[in-house]
Amino acid sequence: MSNKNHLEILKMGAEKWNSWRKENPHETPDFSWANLPEMDLQNYNFKNANLKLAFCKSCNFTGANFENANLYGANLENANCSNANFSGANLEGALIKNAILKNSNLSDCNFRLVNLEGSNLQGADLSGSKKLKIDQISRVSTLYEAKLSERITEKLLAISPHLFRKSNQ
Image 1: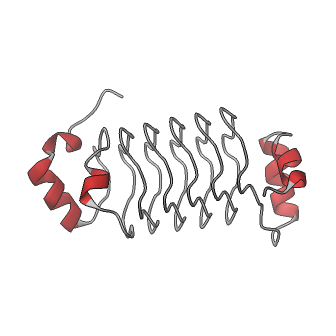
Image 2 (image 1 turned 90 degrees about the vertical axis):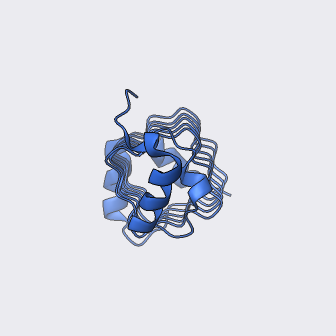
């Protein structure tokens, strides 16, 4: 379960939260099973945080830092994660359906069983991604200017070349 103290500080705003993170660098924020729908969490620092099974549907995570965070089974459906840093995050089993991940860093993430259907990955960096399958990535809305492994890019170009065209989303 989530740490109630962490939730209280989180709800005080980005400045207070990020300040607390700087003052407590060895504390691991725990938002496991947290219910955070539609929250504006723009530019929050969730580095190394535990968001296992967190419900974050329709949140604004623009510019947020999820580096090495645990988002196992988290619900990020319809979330705006533009310019967010997910580098090294565990996204296993996460629902990231219809999310906006424009220009996000998704390098070295675990994508095992992640649902990316309808998500916008324009300009996203997926280099070094682990467990990313063709059937997962082929269901996104766009991969225009995204960074993918050469192997995945070749396979997708053969079956879904439209994903690499500029989108109006």
